[in-house]
Image (cartoon, rainbow, N blue to C red; front, side, top):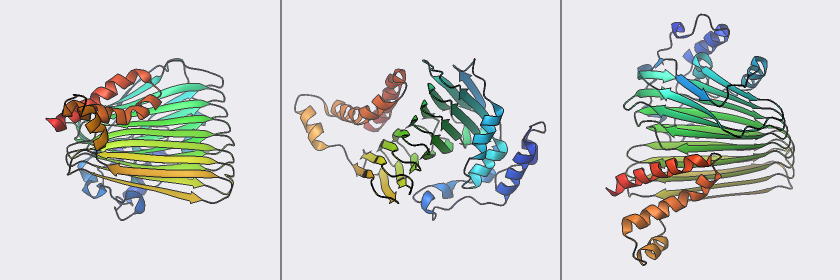
Length: 379
């Protein structure tokens, strides 16, 4: 069990009783097993919670100076959070929350940037980000996870996002953590009538980095898109579990996840499209593509459908394999050196995901990170 003394909970916290109750529930739970379907293929058995103690994460926020979140609205959204396991309970006990609320009709032209700075040794950090988009609002939130070199930490982030009627809300999570950090993320998003949500993830860091995303469409005509770029090298492992949950008629979801693994790294993707009885007329797509760039690398892809009504359109597709030899040969036949040809193929593989990210100015930085990983393997 994590070193979770009640003393780690602020004595003056207004929700101290709720936090203590969550800590008590967590004390009665154990770390999930890889025998559970939602944790299958994971490295969760390697986690030793007793090596970590709760600490306060240092978080900075830019672009939200004139925004004020309504505590009642935040509390109402948090109350809807689905608790799955010990990590959700630990988050409820030790979270440090940043709340972003954009009022109805407001359009922000610059992104709100929330950066979590992971520091210390043997610390467990529980950042929680709550995002509320008022009716017909439009804005982007970027959440960055960065760590000091060699920081040994467990990060358990939670995202709660709600898009009101006709709101257009984009979220981008950037995992730039050191390979000494474990990250176990859970995202829950809901979209009201005619809303549009974009949930984007770029995962490049961490030792074992997991993101579970539950995107629920609760209003007629709502749309959600999920995109992810992940690249693991060395002994890293990236683990994604997604749910596209259609709980209203004429809703639309589209998912595109692309990853690469090299050296002895691993990746897992399991996704579920669920169209409920009330989801008639809905459309859903799910695509996962993976490149294996070394003989010792491994990727798993498991798409699933759960269709409970008629008059719907759904598809899912997944691939795992090496670089297309025809593409490589085409470039090399025109005088391009093999290493350069491989770099061009890999960067081209990720181009459609990079193009879908809500903050275009970040693309050169992310391409540079991808190129650096590839260079480490080539060297």
